[in-house]
Image (tube, rainbow, N blue to C red; front, side, top):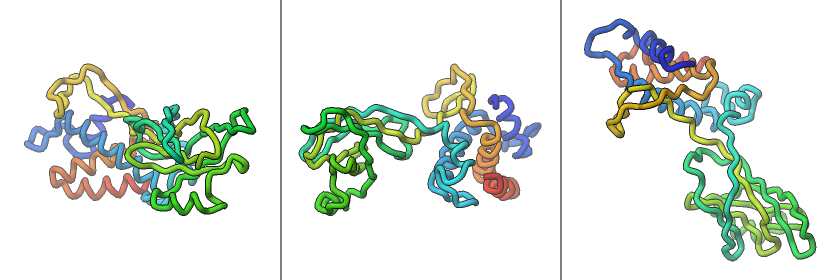
Amino acid sequence: MNNNLLQIKVKQRLNKLDSKDYDNIQCWQIVEAFNKAQVEWCRRQLVGTNILKQGDEQSKRRVDDLEILLKTAPLTLLHVKLYEESSLLPADFMEFKRLEVYATSECCTDPRLMTVYLTEEANVVNSLKDDNKKPSFEWGETFNTLIGNKIRIYTNNDFTVSSAALMYYKQPELIQILNCVDPGTGVPSTVDTPSQFKDDIVEVMIDDTVAILAGDIEAMNQFSRESQAAEKNN
């Protein structure tokens, strides 16, 4: 959906399409509210706080809606005692999905795909002692944690990680409207960047956007209507 149509739809829902009163909505307000709505929508779908209580990949709809945010990034690792520590997570990182880790050992120099489980940092010591959870090249299993905006892949010195890649959900790309002043920089946008999502999802995000703007200008009828519409169509 192009940004001209997006702005028209937002103003239409707010009943400000031809309004000349003090509640006129500026383009930067639409941009800010829509970008906020994108993030809020993504978080609701990923964690399952939507009306259907479905998290990521719990239904075909969630798979279809969220696949555009899935991304792969290779990891640069540094050996530290019992684990391999990655560099900082990507700047657009939003939510962890999985790791793809290949490892070798003294007895097997051909890289082997490992099964890696995300573990709480508080349970690291217990996991290292537990025969069913500790890193094992023989069983092709290990665990990882997230700490300090980095990933730790535990090896317990049982094997060597030859390569690793992170699969994650990225932050949604921010929209920009050509010649609209960015309130953060005070500089007009030189490009027109529409939403990366499908039109049917953008329609839902428009309802969220209108609810945000309606709350800002205390238009309670529009706020209530659009909040309900956004959730009902998830």
